[in-house]
Structure formats: C-alpha cells, structure tokens
Length: 260
Image 1 (cartoon, rainbow, N blue to C red):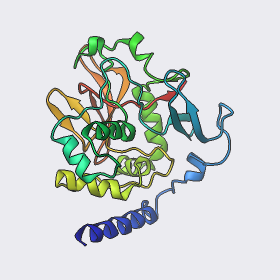
Image 2: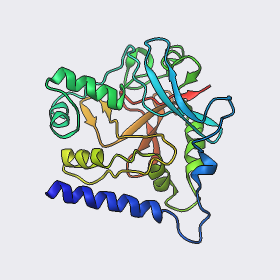
Image 3: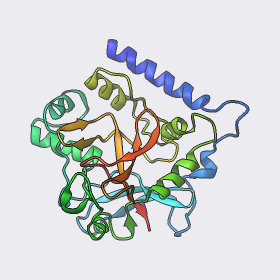
Image 4: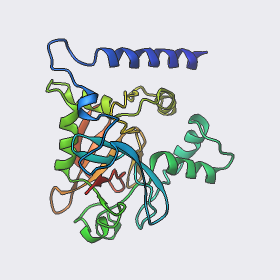
C-alpha cells in the first residue's frame, strides 16, 4: 500500500509538472514545433522510427529534434572495453526491485543491457583518462551515425530550454523517460529521492544508465560520452541527474549516437 501511495503521488506530480513547467510570462516551449512526431526530417526520413544496425542486426528507435536525429535508446553494440556489468550489490538490488522476467543473475545482466545499453571507454587502450582513440571511437556507432561532440549535445539542450534560470532542469525533464514505475523503484533501490520521471516530450526516453569509475559505480547519474577532448587527460561528458551539466569523463559511460 505504501508503494502504491508513492506511485499515485509521483503520477500526480508528473502531471502537475507537465501542466505548469513554464511561468506565465515565459515563452512557451512547444513539442509540435521542436520535435513533431509526424512528418519527415531533413534526411527525408519519418521524424520517428526505427533502423537496423547491420553489424549485429539490432533494431534501434530514433527521434528527430530540430535538425538533429538522435538514437532514442543507448548504444548496445558489444565492443572492446565495453560492459554492462555493474557488479555487486547493484545487480541483486536491480533484480529485486526493477521489473523484468528473470530467474537467474545471467538473465538479469541481459535485462540490464537491454534496458540501459552498454558502458564504453573511448580512451586509448580502454584507459580511464587520456586521449580519445579517434579511429576506435568512429567504429562504435552504427554506419551513418556518430558519437556527438559537446557542441552537438549543447544544440540539443538549447532546443529544450526556454531561457529561464532553471532551463537545464526543464531540459532534463523534457528529455527524461516518463516511466514513473522505474523511477520509484530506482529511488527505493538507493533509499533516496534524487531522480524523478520526466515527460519524455521528444521520445528521447533517457533513463539513469549509470557510469563506472574505478571501483565507483553510480546508477543515479546518466553520463554520455562526447568526442570533445577537454585536455590531454580528460574528455567531456554530458551528465543528466538533478539537471544537465558537462563534466570530465569516468572510466565507462553510455553512448547516444547522432545521425551524420
């Protein structure tokens, strides 16, 4: 009953946020203008749809936002230096709290991969810090797609903002998945209340996919690779948690591919 009450509250809060996301004196953000579901994009493709990665036959969803076409789920291609093993005790907690149809830990690991994608290194020889292995990074996304630069992530974020002081929080809510059940389970898993369901206005369906840095494994934060080198040691990542920010790389991060 307690969980049901929490779920009802979260649903009502999400609906309330969707109805009052902007102040009355601010320009209104309009999904029908920024990311219309119907129509075709600059590539002549339907604004939303699916495509097949020829390498492994996996099907991915995509969505059009402005003049950009993004994969609407995290990359799952099995590549060197990649993993979807968050280790213990994360898997046990995940298996107990998050919806799946598994009886074994191995099945649970596959379920994790399907939901969150894999975590990758794009640094030379899979190191935690250093220079991007450009040739290797160019092989990770499906043909016709690439790992975005920091500037390309900023274009996406700017298209979801309205210019207010909390614009990054607004952008996060518009991009995050609207899966209330998932966020309720995730907060229970961590005994915290840092993550909230979004409204997924453009079908990007971003979920906290976590990151790995040495022995640190965080499942509350989403960290996406960019191909923008911040220094000789660090690469920029786009981080989505309480808001959206840019930080330097962890050992393993998620990848969202952008159409060339």
